[in-house]
Amino acid sequence: MPFQSSVGDYQTVATLETFGFLPPMTQEEIYDQIAYIIAQGWSPVIEHVHPSGSMQTYWSYWKLPFFGEKDLNLVVSELEACHRAYPDHHVRIIGYDAYTQSQGTAFAVFQGR
Image 1: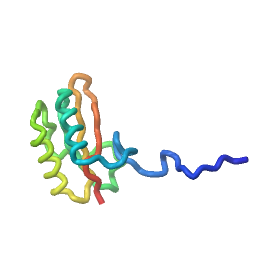
Image 2: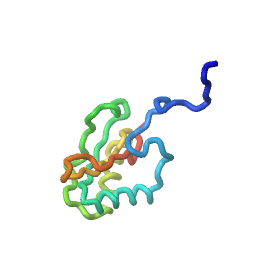
Image 3: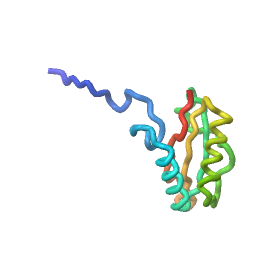
């Protein structure tokens, strides 16, 4: 007898980044994640891409990485500025760890249309 399930597999729905399988985060949860990036000493990086290119390896930088940035409000205001400039694009933040030279975390903050 073939196995039948009403639950789809992980490929059923396209997801974005680390928290893509979870319900959308609240603004407070997003702030907490950005605060965590800063507390770890990672450099916040803001990137954006049109949804049609979201599965590409490289997204466009909003600005240069915010090396050594400690101000949560500045990072949040830059995320919002990027979203205003590109309202139809996905916008994500990356926590870049300079010690390991890798991404500590990455997640989509705004999803494009």
